[in-house]
Each structure stands twice: as structure tokens, then as C-alpha cells.
Length: 444
Image (cartoon, rainbow, N blue to C red; front, side, top):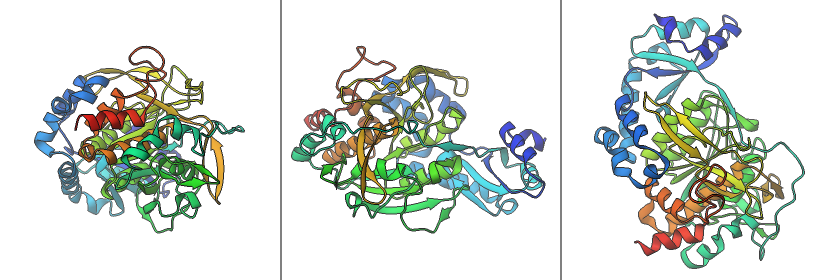
């Protein structure tokens, strides 16, 4: 009976491991989280447009039990911890991942099998590794700057928002990436909090640093100031809560989820994610849904895999998946996009990704050591969108804590590109921060 609780991926992992080798795994406690019927109801209703415009219908079944925002998070944490308390003695070294309704544990083959015997354990799964979304390294020329403003920042209308409505002050952006060089002049004073996580999702004591270059680059797009004469950040007065969850460019599921939930616990209004993978899409449905129900806007790259494919978590229904455009407002050849049909508890939901597109080719931004470099990728496009969300919620505080309304405004105010309506390349269109803020202000 206990053997049936071990997922195939975990069985493969422990089969390769020596008898005394310690591996990490994910425990799914019994009866933790919203009823599957409630989640199925949400998925059966949640095509892209309804997800954006009908929050009361989508949330009713879950919020009746768990509440919303902070109360949702607290109730979910409490229930998971109550269940896990009955098991904790069998796995003393563990990380509670309320965002995924799972617990990350470390143990030998025998210890994991013994843990599976516990009646409160529904199943034990592998803790797979995911990598950042990036285009294979090739020399990239930056797009043309406009009056000292990086082309992508200018293209989405951020400077017009700065002049009339502010620069994102008061907003916290969750940054889940390879870390950050907070000593870069463009990022000085932008980091409100920093935390590194290990493969189990446990905090690591360290000072802010970038284990790669990717995190510093996306951070610059999110909230950077001026780098070598170029204004690189969409929301330069917003603050970052930066989680180093992808050391060297890759991290485990537990690591990334721990980084995202830590950002939520720090008070993040929007979380910008950097990873993208074609593997294990099912694993990201609960984290993205729970981020949204916690009152946070999740933004993720749709992947650098070209048309006809997409990557998780950017292709998950609950988040804002972002494709990349170039300086000519053309979709990048590497930008992912496809029609998806994903069963959820027997209730299939068909939808397309990306939701929106944003500048992601030849994007100048910060690099460790004080440099300014250009790079391309849908993760940079996602950073533009997360920055636009920060500008929008800062200008219209009533939108804070309401990811559904924020999403609705953002999608309704895009600059039309591609096919009429929504397509698999641009989504609903290219994001327009100026238009979204003006639209929201007009209705508040």
C-alpha cells in the first residue's frame, strides 16, 4: 500500500540513489486544501476572459471555505500545518510549502518508504528541477533608446505614467530568480528584502548576490533606475523582495515555491517569475492558483520555445503568461504560444497562451558589476508586464489585492497586435501601461 503512494518520478530517483543517499521529495498530506470538486468548478468556468472578468463566480466555492487574500493564506497555512503536525516526527527536516499544499522533505530511500506508510500522507512525489527562461546565448544589440529611456520601457508607455501618476511607489514586486546585485548603481536602494533558499525550500543565510546574471537583469527591468545613462526600469520607485531560488540558473520545485511564498509573506503585490519548463505542468497549477487567491498577481514567461509550444508556469491558466515582442512590435520568433487543453479533476479547460506580449528582444538592463548589457527572452517580457502591474496598482490603489480586476484592466487596455481579439502569438495584444492606468483611473 505504501509503495503505491510513491510517484513514478520519485521511484526513478530513489532507484538511482544509493541506500544511504538522501534525496528531496514532496509530500502531499491527505485532505489538505480546497475540495477537488471546488477546484474543478473553478477550472470548468475559467476560460481566459471569464477568469479576468467574473471573479465572484470563480472564487465563490473556494472563498466560502478559505476566505481571500491574507485570510485565505492564513487558513491554508493553518490547515496544512495541522495535518503535517501529525507526521512531522517521521520527517523532522522539512519545509512547509503552503503555496503548493505540500511539504518538502529530505530522506533516504528507506525513510521515504516509511513516511509513505503514515495514514496522513496521500502521496510522495519527486522534487524536480526547473531552469530560467532564456534564449540561447548569442550577441544581442540593444533596441534604440528614446530620450535616454530603454526602448521597452518607452514602448509600453511607462514614462507617461511616471509624469502623471507616479513611478510605482509603495508597491512591492516579488522577484523569484537567480538573485540580485544590489550594489549595482541602478538597483541601489531598490531591494526591500532578500532571501536565498536551498533545494528543500529552506532559507539560507546570505547577503544579496546574483548566482548568475539573469536575476540582476530582470530586476533592472522591473524597478531599476539609471544604468550608464539609460533609464532601464518600468517601475523605478517600486521596491523588490528578491528570492534567490534558481542558483546558477536552475532550482527545484520546492526552492522556487518557497521563494514565491516568501515574497507573498513579505507583502508582494505582484510576483515576477523567471523559470520556464515543458516538464511537469500539473505541478504549477496549485501554486499559481493560490498566489491569485492570496491577492497577488503572478506573472511568468510563456517560454522561449517558438510558436506551437509553451512552458509552465507561464502557460498556466491562473497566471499572466507573457510573450516577447521586438522594437518593431513584431512577435519574436522564439516566443512561445499555443492552444492548451488541460484536464483538471475531470473538468477540461481550453484556453490559449500567452495572455499578453511585451518587449523582450534586445532589452538593455543591469548586469552584475555595474554593467549595462542587452539580452532577449520572454522572462524579460514578463518583467515589463510585472512592472506595468506595479505602475497600475500604485496609480489606482483600489486594485491592490485584486488580481482579477488588475488582470481585466491590463488585458482590456492592450495595444492591439496580431489577429483580432486573442491569438497564440501576441495574446490579447502588447501591454500598454499608460492606457491601462488611464482606463483604471477613469473608472475609479
